[in-house]
Image 1 (cartoon, rainbow, N blue to C red):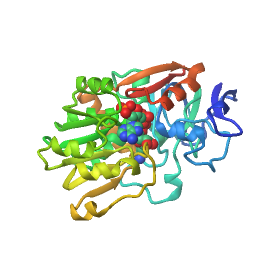
Image 2 (cartoon, helix red, strand yellow; image 1 turned 30 degrees about the vertical axis):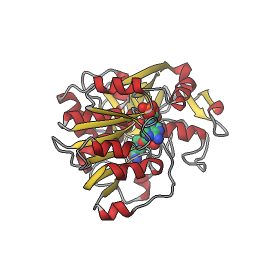
Image 3 (cartoon, rainbow, N blue to C red; image 1 turned 60 degrees about the horizontal axis):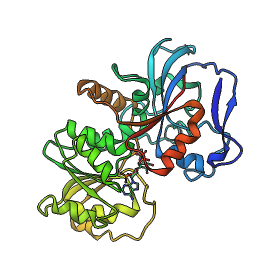
Image 4 (cartoon, rainbow, N blue to C red; image 1 turned 60 degrees about the vertical axis):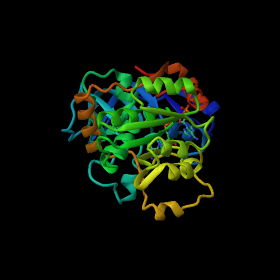
Length: 339
Ligand SMILES: NC(=O)c1ccc[n+]([C@@H]2O[C@H](COP(=O)([O-])OP(=O)(O)OC[C@H]3O[C@@H](n4cnc5c(N)ncnc54)[C@H](OP(=O)(O)O)[C@@H]3O)[C@@H](O)[C@H]2O)c1
Protein backbone atom coordinates (compact mmCIF):
# COMPACT_ATOMS: atom_id res chain seq x y z
CA UNK A 1 0.00 0.00 0.00
CA UNK A 2 1.06 3.58 -0.59
CA UNK A 3 1.58 6.14 2.12
CA UNK A 4 3.05 9.61 2.35
CA UNK A 5 5.99 9.99 4.70
CA UNK A 6 7.95 12.95 5.92
CA UNK A 7 11.14 11.07 5.14
CA UNK A 8 14.55 11.80 6.71
CA UNK A 9 14.07 15.53 7.23
CA UNK A 10 11.26 18.07 7.62
CA UNK A 11 10.10 20.21 4.72
CA UNK A 12 7.47 19.83 2.02
CA UNK A 13 10.18 18.72 -0.42
CA UNK A 14 10.70 15.67 1.81
CA UNK A 15 7.05 14.56 1.76
CA UNK A 16 7.24 11.46 -0.44
CA UNK A 17 5.06 8.52 -1.43
CA UNK A 18 6.47 5.21 -0.18
CA UNK A 19 5.37 1.59 -0.57
CA UNK A 20 4.72 -0.12 2.76
CA UNK A 21 3.50 -3.61 3.66
CA UNK A 22 -0.23 -3.68 4.28
CA UNK A 23 -0.55 -3.37 8.07
CA UNK A 24 -2.47 -5.98 10.08
CA UNK A 25 -4.36 -4.99 13.25
CA UNK A 26 -3.21 -6.27 16.63
CA UNK A 27 -5.45 -6.93 19.65
CA UNK A 28 -8.00 -4.13 20.06
CA UNK A 29 -7.05 -2.54 16.75
CA UNK A 30 -8.72 -2.08 13.37
CA UNK A 31 -7.32 -1.67 9.85
CA UNK A 32 -9.08 1.12 7.99
CA UNK A 33 -8.95 1.50 4.20
CA UNK A 34 -8.73 5.28 3.94
CA UNK A 35 -10.97 6.98 1.39
CA UNK A 36 -10.35 10.66 2.18
CA UNK A 37 -8.16 12.83 4.39
CA UNK A 38 -8.48 16.47 5.39
CA UNK A 39 -5.62 18.80 6.23
CA UNK A 40 -5.32 20.90 9.34
CA UNK A 41 -2.94 23.79 9.89
CA UNK A 42 -1.17 21.57 12.42
CA UNK A 43 -0.33 19.08 9.64
CA UNK A 44 1.37 21.84 7.66
CA UNK A 45 3.35 22.89 10.77
CA UNK A 46 4.29 19.21 11.32
CA UNK A 47 5.55 18.75 7.75
CA UNK A 48 7.56 21.97 8.00
CA UNK A 49 9.10 20.83 11.31
CA UNK A 50 7.57 23.77 13.21
CA UNK A 51 5.11 21.77 15.32
CA UNK A 52 7.56 19.44 17.05
CA UNK A 53 11.10 19.62 15.67
CA UNK A 54 11.98 16.57 17.83
CA UNK A 55 9.32 14.36 16.24
CA UNK A 56 11.07 11.14 15.13
CA UNK A 57 10.99 10.55 11.35
CA UNK A 58 9.82 9.04 9.10
CA UNK A 59 6.24 10.01 9.93
CA UNK A 60 2.96 9.59 8.03
CA UNK A 61 1.30 13.00 8.48
CA UNK A 62 -2.34 14.03 9.07
CA UNK A 63 -4.79 13.25 11.85
CA UNK A 64 -8.07 13.26 9.97
CA UNK A 65 -9.39 10.50 7.78
CA UNK A 66 -12.53 8.73 6.68
CA UNK A 67 -12.64 5.15 5.49
CA UNK A 68 -13.99 1.63 5.81
CA UNK A 69 -12.93 -1.01 8.32
CA UNK A 70 -11.10 -3.73 6.33
CA UNK A 71 -10.02 -6.00 9.20
CA UNK A 72 -10.34 -6.15 12.98
CA UNK A 73 -7.85 -7.56 15.49
CA UNK A 74 -8.54 -10.01 18.32
CA UNK A 75 -11.04 -8.83 20.92
CA UNK A 76 -12.52 -5.98 18.89
CA UNK A 77 -16.22 -5.46 19.64
CA UNK A 78 -16.98 -1.76 18.99
CA UNK A 79 -16.71 -1.95 15.19
CA UNK A 80 -16.90 -4.60 12.47
CA UNK A 81 -15.53 -5.12 8.99
CA UNK A 82 -17.33 -2.89 6.47
CA UNK A 83 -18.20 -0.10 8.95
CA UNK A 84 -17.72 3.44 7.64
CA UNK A 85 -15.67 5.36 10.20
CA UNK A 86 -13.73 8.53 10.94
CA UNK A 87 -10.45 8.65 12.85
CA UNK A 88 -10.30 10.27 16.29
CA UNK A 89 -7.56 12.87 16.71
CA UNK A 90 -6.76 11.32 20.12
CA UNK A 91 -6.57 7.54 19.99
CA UNK A 92 -6.69 7.36 23.79
CA UNK A 93 -9.30 9.94 24.95
CA UNK A 94 -12.66 8.25 25.06
CA UNK A 95 -14.72 10.60 27.25
CA UNK A 96 -14.70 13.19 30.02
CA UNK A 97 -12.21 15.95 30.74
CA UNK A 98 -8.83 16.16 29.03
CA UNK A 99 -6.78 13.12 30.15
CA UNK A 100 -4.11 13.61 32.78
CA UNK A 101 -1.86 10.75 31.75
CA UNK A 102 0.83 11.55 29.23
CA UNK A 103 0.27 8.43 27.11
CA UNK A 104 -3.31 9.46 26.33
CA UNK A 105 -2.27 13.06 25.66
CA UNK A 106 0.39 11.82 23.25
CA UNK A 107 -1.97 9.43 21.45
CA UNK A 108 -2.49 11.89 18.58
CA UNK A 109 -2.40 10.89 14.91
CA UNK A 110 -0.01 12.56 12.49
CA UNK A 111 2.56 12.91 15.31
CA UNK A 112 3.64 11.36 17.58
CA UNK A 113 1.57 8.45 16.13
CA UNK A 114 1.60 7.71 12.42
CA UNK A 115 -1.20 9.51 10.58
CA UNK A 116 -3.90 9.00 7.99
CA UNK A 117 -2.31 10.11 4.70
CA UNK A 118 -2.02 6.50 3.54
CA UNK A 119 -4.14 3.90 1.77
CA UNK A 120 -4.49 2.00 5.04
CA UNK A 121 -4.06 2.93 8.67
CA UNK A 122 -4.13 0.94 11.92
CA UNK A 123 -6.27 2.59 14.61
CA UNK A 124 -7.40 1.62 18.09
CA UNK A 125 -10.98 0.33 18.13
CA UNK A 126 -11.69 3.14 20.58
CA UNK A 127 -10.00 5.58 18.21
CA UNK A 128 -12.72 5.63 15.56
CA UNK A 129 -16.33 6.82 15.41
CA UNK A 130 -19.12 5.86 13.04
CA UNK A 131 -19.29 8.21 10.06
CA UNK A 132 -22.39 10.41 10.20
CA UNK A 133 -24.96 9.27 7.63
CA UNK A 134 -25.46 11.40 4.56
CA UNK A 135 -21.97 12.93 4.39
CA UNK A 136 -19.47 12.19 1.62
CA UNK A 137 -16.07 10.65 2.45
CA UNK A 138 -14.42 14.06 2.14
CA UNK A 139 -17.04 15.68 4.37
CA UNK A 140 -16.55 12.98 7.04
CA UNK A 141 -12.78 13.51 6.81
CA UNK A 142 -13.18 17.19 7.76
CA UNK A 143 -14.63 16.39 11.18
CA UNK A 144 -12.03 14.83 13.55
CA UNK A 145 -9.97 17.93 14.38
CA UNK A 146 -11.40 21.21 13.05
CA UNK A 147 -15.08 20.49 13.62
CA UNK A 148 -14.61 18.89 17.03
CA UNK A 149 -12.40 21.76 18.19
CA UNK A 150 -15.04 24.34 17.26
CA UNK A 151 -17.77 22.20 18.84
CA UNK A 152 -15.78 21.72 22.08
CA UNK A 153 -14.95 25.41 22.30
CA UNK A 154 -18.44 26.74 21.73
CA UNK A 155 -20.93 24.13 22.83
CA UNK A 156 -19.02 22.07 25.43
CA UNK A 157 -16.73 24.54 27.18
CA UNK A 158 -18.03 27.93 26.08
CA UNK A 159 -21.71 27.39 26.82
CA UNK A 160 -22.75 29.47 23.80
CA UNK A 161 -26.38 30.55 24.15
CA UNK A 162 -28.99 31.67 21.63
CA UNK A 163 -28.69 35.44 21.24
CA UNK A 164 -25.01 35.52 22.26
CA UNK A 165 -22.55 37.35 20.00
CA UNK A 166 -19.49 35.40 18.86
CA UNK A 167 -16.38 36.81 17.19
CA UNK A 168 -14.57 34.41 14.83
CA UNK A 169 -11.13 35.03 13.29
CA UNK A 170 -10.59 34.14 9.63
CA UNK A 171 -12.32 31.74 7.27
CA UNK A 172 -10.25 28.55 7.66
CA UNK A 173 -11.39 25.11 8.77
CA UNK A 174 -12.04 25.71 12.49
CA UNK A 175 -13.52 29.16 11.78
CA UNK A 176 -16.22 27.96 9.37
CA UNK A 177 -17.22 25.08 11.65
CA UNK A 178 -17.45 27.70 14.41
CA UNK A 179 -19.79 29.71 12.19
CA UNK A 180 -21.95 26.65 11.48
CA UNK A 181 -22.24 25.60 15.14
CA UNK A 182 -22.94 29.17 16.23
CA UNK A 183 -25.79 29.47 13.74
CA UNK A 184 -27.05 26.07 14.93
CA UNK A 185 -27.09 27.46 18.49
CA UNK A 186 -28.86 30.68 17.48
CA UNK A 187 -25.93 33.01 18.10
CA UNK A 188 -24.99 36.20 16.25
CA UNK A 189 -21.64 35.94 14.45
CA UNK A 190 -19.06 38.60 13.65
CA UNK A 191 -16.37 37.14 11.39
CA UNK A 192 -13.04 38.63 10.32
CA UNK A 193 -10.98 37.91 7.21
CA UNK A 194 -8.12 39.35 5.16
CA UNK A 195 -10.35 39.12 2.09
CA UNK A 196 -13.58 40.99 1.27
CA UNK A 197 -14.51 38.23 -1.15
CA UNK A 198 -14.24 35.60 1.62
CA UNK A 199 -16.30 37.85 3.90
CA UNK A 200 -19.08 37.91 1.27
CA UNK A 201 -18.99 34.11 1.17
CA UNK A 202 -19.14 34.00 4.99
CA UNK A 203 -22.23 36.23 4.88
CA UNK A 204 -23.84 33.79 2.47
CA UNK A 205 -23.23 31.07 5.09
CA UNK A 206 -24.98 33.11 7.78
CA UNK A 207 -22.38 35.48 9.24
CA UNK A 208 -24.22 38.54 10.56
CA UNK A 209 -21.35 41.06 10.56
CA UNK A 210 -17.98 41.09 8.80
CA UNK A 211 -14.71 42.96 9.37
CA UNK A 212 -11.62 42.93 7.15
CA UNK A 213 -8.75 42.62 9.64
CA UNK A 214 -6.24 43.95 7.10
CA UNK A 215 -8.08 47.19 6.28
CA UNK A 216 -9.33 47.49 9.88
CA UNK A 217 -6.32 46.65 12.08
CA UNK A 218 -8.34 47.68 15.16
CA UNK A 219 -10.92 44.98 14.42
CA UNK A 220 -11.42 44.28 18.12
CA UNK A 221 -12.59 47.84 18.65
CA UNK A 222 -14.79 47.55 15.54
CA UNK A 223 -16.35 44.32 16.86
CA UNK A 224 -17.11 45.99 20.20
CA UNK A 225 -18.78 48.86 18.35
CA UNK A 226 -21.04 46.31 16.66
CA UNK A 227 -22.36 45.38 20.12
CA UNK A 228 -23.23 48.98 21.10
CA UNK A 229 -20.03 49.11 23.11
CA UNK A 230 -20.89 46.19 25.42
CA UNK A 231 -18.44 43.71 23.87
CA UNK A 232 -18.90 40.24 22.42
CA UNK A 233 -19.81 37.28 24.62
CA UNK A 234 -17.37 34.88 23.08
CA UNK A 235 -14.23 34.85 20.90
CA UNK A 236 -12.82 31.94 18.88
CA UNK A 237 -9.15 32.90 19.27
CA UNK A 238 -7.38 31.36 16.28
CA UNK A 239 -4.56 33.86 15.80
CA UNK A 240 -3.10 33.37 19.29
CA UNK A 241 -0.63 35.84 20.75
CA UNK A 242 -0.71 38.09 17.66
CA UNK A 243 -4.47 38.64 17.86
CA UNK A 244 -5.21 38.29 21.59
CA UNK A 245 -4.85 42.03 22.36
CA UNK A 246 -7.61 42.89 19.86
CA UNK A 247 -9.71 40.00 21.16
CA UNK A 248 -9.41 41.50 24.65
CA UNK A 249 -10.67 44.81 23.22
CA UNK A 250 -13.64 43.01 21.70
CA UNK A 251 -14.78 40.78 24.57
CA UNK A 252 -17.34 41.93 27.14
CA UNK A 253 -16.83 41.95 30.91
CA UNK A 254 -17.18 38.32 32.04
CA UNK A 255 -16.91 37.13 28.44
CA UNK A 256 -15.17 33.99 27.23
CA UNK A 257 -12.18 33.53 24.90
CA UNK A 258 -11.49 30.04 23.51
CA UNK A 259 -7.73 29.94 22.92
CA UNK A 260 -7.35 27.53 20.01
CA UNK A 261 -4.77 28.61 17.48
CA UNK A 262 -1.46 30.27 16.86
CA UNK A 263 -1.92 31.48 13.27
CA UNK A 264 -0.54 34.88 14.27
CA UNK A 265 2.16 33.52 16.59
CA UNK A 266 2.53 31.81 19.96
CA UNK A 267 4.42 34.58 21.76
CA UNK A 268 3.94 38.35 21.95
CA UNK A 269 4.09 41.24 24.41
CA UNK A 270 0.57 41.42 25.84
CA UNK A 271 -1.20 43.70 28.30
CA UNK A 272 -3.15 41.22 30.41
CA UNK A 273 -4.78 43.85 32.63
CA UNK A 274 -8.12 43.61 30.78
CA UNK A 275 -8.31 39.90 31.63
CA UNK A 276 -8.61 40.64 35.35
CA UNK A 277 -10.25 44.05 35.19
CA UNK A 278 -12.98 42.63 32.95
CA UNK A 279 -13.15 39.21 34.60
CA UNK A 280 -12.51 37.54 31.24
CA UNK A 281 -12.37 33.74 31.07
CA UNK A 282 -9.65 32.40 28.74
CA UNK A 283 -9.97 28.69 28.08
CA UNK A 284 -7.41 26.60 26.18
CA UNK A 285 -9.04 24.09 23.85
CA UNK A 286 -7.55 20.77 22.77
CA UNK A 287 -9.77 19.17 20.12
CA UNK A 288 -12.02 16.86 22.19
CA UNK A 289 -12.92 13.34 23.23
CA UNK A 290 -14.45 10.50 21.22
CA UNK A 291 -17.67 10.83 23.17
CA UNK A 292 -17.92 14.52 22.23
CA UNK A 293 -17.11 13.60 18.60
CA UNK A 294 -20.11 11.25 18.66
CA UNK A 295 -22.33 13.90 20.26
CA UNK A 296 -21.22 16.41 17.62
CA UNK A 297 -22.02 13.94 14.84
CA UNK A 298 -25.57 13.54 16.18
CA UNK A 299 -25.94 17.33 16.02
CA UNK A 300 -24.52 17.39 12.48
CA UNK A 301 -27.07 14.82 11.30
CA UNK A 302 -29.93 16.47 13.19
CA UNK A 303 -29.20 19.87 11.65
CA UNK A 304 -28.08 18.57 8.24
CA UNK A 305 -24.81 20.49 8.61
CA UNK A 306 -22.60 20.29 5.51
CA UNK A 307 -18.89 21.02 6.00
CA UNK A 308 -17.41 23.66 3.71
CA UNK A 309 -14.77 22.09 1.46
CA UNK A 310 -12.58 24.50 -0.45
CA UNK A 311 -10.93 21.93 -2.71
CA UNK A 312 -10.17 18.21 -2.94
CA UNK A 313 -6.82 17.07 -4.31
CA UNK A 314 -5.95 13.63 -5.73
CA UNK A 315 -3.63 11.41 -3.64
CA UNK A 316 -0.72 12.10 -6.00
CA UNK A 317 -1.28 15.83 -5.51
CA UNK A 318 -1.06 15.82 -1.70
CA UNK A 319 2.06 18.06 -1.59
CA UNK A 320 0.10 20.62 -3.64
CA UNK A 321 -2.68 20.42 -1.05
CA UNK A 322 -0.18 21.42 1.66
CA UNK A 323 1.09 24.26 -0.55
CA UNK A 324 -2.49 25.42 -1.02
CA UNK A 325 -2.92 25.57 2.76
CA UNK A 326 0.36 27.46 3.11
CA UNK A 327 -0.89 30.09 0.67
CA UNK A 328 -3.96 30.71 2.93
CA UNK A 329 -6.14 31.26 -0.12
CA UNK A 330 -8.60 28.58 1.00
CA UNK A 331 -12.08 29.02 2.43
CA UNK A 332 -12.94 26.13 4.77
CA UNK A 333 -11.35 22.71 4.50
CA UNK A 334 -8.80 21.19 2.12
CA UNK A 335 -9.15 17.46 1.38
CA UNK A 336 -7.16 14.70 -0.29
CA UNK A 337 -8.95 11.81 -2.03
CA UNK A 338 -7.17 8.56 -1.16
CA UNK A 339 -9.09 5.42 -2.15
N1 LIG B 1 -6.13 23.71 19.97
C1 LIG B 1 -6.63 22.83 19.13
O1 LIG B 1 -7.13 21.77 19.54
C2 LIG B 1 -6.65 23.15 17.68
C3 LIG B 1 -7.41 22.38 16.80
C4 LIG B 1 -7.48 22.76 15.45
C5 LIG B 1 -6.76 23.88 15.02
N2 LIG B 1 -6.00 24.55 15.90
C6 LIG B 1 -5.28 25.75 15.47
O2 LIG B 1 -6.25 26.69 15.05
C7 LIG B 1 -5.72 27.48 14.01
C8 LIG B 1 -6.62 27.37 12.79
O3 LIG B 1 -6.50 26.06 12.26
P1 LIG B 1 -7.20 25.69 10.88
O4 LIG B 1 -6.83 24.28 10.59
O5 LIG B 1 -8.60 26.11 10.90
O6 LIG B 1 -6.37 26.66 9.90
P2 LIG B 1 -6.64 27.08 8.42
O7 LIG B 1 -7.79 26.35 7.84
O8 LIG B 1 -5.33 26.99 7.71
O9 LIG B 1 -7.05 28.62 8.56
C9 LIG B 1 -6.28 29.61 7.97
C10 LIG B 1 -7.05 30.92 7.95
O10 LIG B 1 -6.96 31.59 9.19
C11 LIG B 1 -7.02 32.98 8.98
N3 LIG B 1 -5.92 33.70 9.63
C12 LIG B 1 -4.60 33.56 9.45
N4 LIG B 1 -3.94 34.49 10.16
C13 LIG B 1 -4.88 35.23 10.77
C14 LIG B 1 -4.85 36.36 11.63
N5 LIG B 1 -3.69 36.93 11.99
N6 LIG B 1 -6.02 36.85 12.09
C15 LIG B 1 -7.19 36.31 11.73
N7 LIG B 1 -7.29 35.23 10.91
C16 LIG B 1 -6.14 34.72 10.45
C17 LIG B 1 -6.96 33.22 7.47
O11 LIG B 1 -8.30 33.52 7.06
P3 LIG B 1 -8.57 34.61 5.93
O12 LIG B 1 -7.94 34.04 4.70
O13 LIG B 1 -10.05 34.68 5.87
O14 LIG B 1 -7.92 35.88 6.37
C18 LIG B 1 -6.49 31.88 6.95
O15 LIG B 1 -6.96 31.62 5.65
C19 LIG B 1 -4.28 26.98 13.79
O16 LIG B 1 -3.39 27.75 14.55
C20 LIG B 1 -4.33 25.57 14.32
O17 LIG B 1 -3.07 25.09 14.71
C21 LIG B 1 -5.92 24.21 17.21
